[in-house]
Length: 109
Length: 112
Image 1 (cartoon, each protein chain N blue to C red):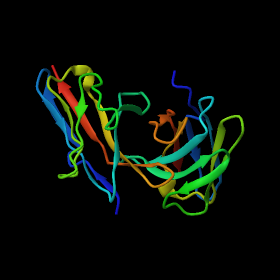
Image 2 (cartoon, rainbow over the protein chains, first blue to last red; image 1 turned 60 degrees about the vertical axis):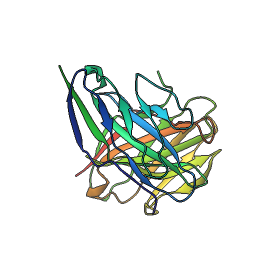
Image 3 (cartoon, helix red, strand yellow; image 1 turned 90 degrees about the vertical axis):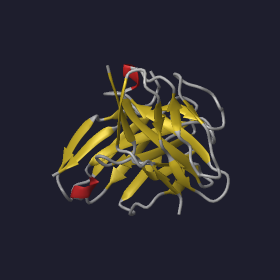
């Protein structure tokens, strides 16, 4: 079964600390993975996708096929990073997104 | 402004009633998908439309139906509402396959 697992509901860190939001997936074939972010009172928006291999707002994510993971990392967290983060997998010929349950990142001053 | 707008923002309906939610996609976005997000969960795929034809469906019963129109607007219809249908309903559009989706702000539906 195709599935995305985000094991942590809440990740609480202090400003300047490193952050790693975990995402594991189950998918047969070559996965296409995304991270979406939802800031308070804002809509869900694309943060990054593994195909582009880019860094957005200091965040990076590397696809590890051996461990079936796509963890989101940032070396130094900022208060404005506080948000809900969702890992998502594109599935099927019509490209539906399968989302994890999300991790709330809280960055404290 | 992302260009995907949904209406209404909030809605309260009674069990058994029918509801229509609306979405206006970004111009040129031929693909529109609808998602249901229950409290504390990630969005779950309902169905997708491409050029006015349904081309994918998630694990939702037939009382969830949709339409897509040539002007890039779309509708989600839910018949015989149940209490468990209470959720945030998200519309997402994409220019083409493989692009990241642009999401609307959602419609929060409460069924009482």
